[in-house]
Image 1: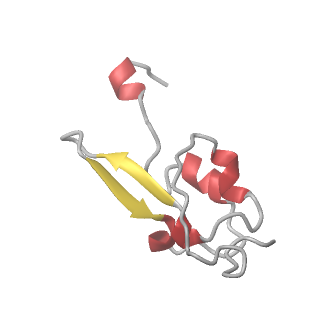
Image 2 (image 1 turned 90 degrees about the vertical axis):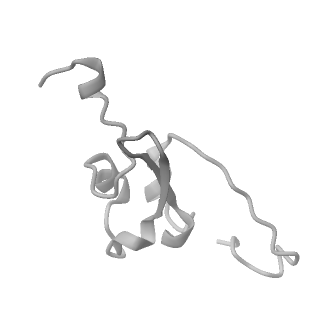
Length: 86
């Protein structure tokens, strides 16, 4: 992969984007752990950012599965607000 190479990005440009596509979490060599940030609202509806690297996932950990299980926060559990019961 030729991402993160100073010869290709001589001016150190950054691209910031957001997505709801959780499959990108397990794309090989696409992002480093410190490049993935999750947003979560607290009870007062204030948004907070947390880096995936703060959770110290194992090298071969299935990040998408862990995210969807709520291991890293940022998952929209809407059941309470929608009145859905399991």
